[in-house]
Length: 177
Image (cartoon, rainbow, N blue to C red; front, side, top):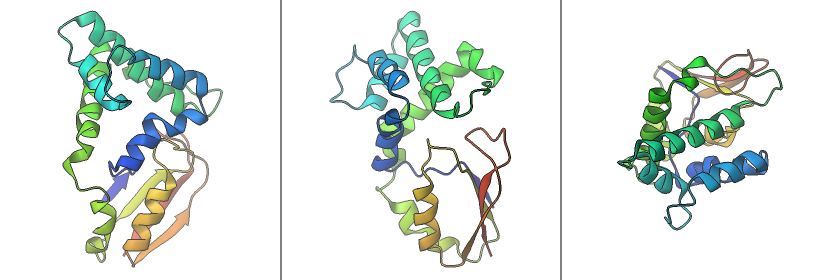
């Protein structure tokens, strides 16, 4: 089993991704937040963006998808020479991606909060690896640390160099044997 860019859709992770990471990218986060300002969802940005992305007005959907994509690109561009994947220029991809993410996040993956971490021990003995970029701040490494603490047979090894999107070589690989 190979798990890549680990996230478990907990309320804490969703809040981190839609708010917490903003402390590292305040200007980009303000644009992201302001992109959903037209919808009042009690501060829940995933819910607000979901409403915009499902609008019957194509201009509203396109703008929301662009704002979501810009936020995604801001948090992966930890190096000044970062070049986004060309798929982000495709309006259909942006809309589909943003709709998928917000659909899952507004429902917290239809999971009891924290259940994936609490049940990680059930994977003990299944050969596999967890791969997560050291600089992937969109998916905090604490998730992997919590996962491995529950999966008693996990071993960690740090490989050199990476961010989200896998363009460089430093990833945290954790073998489950």
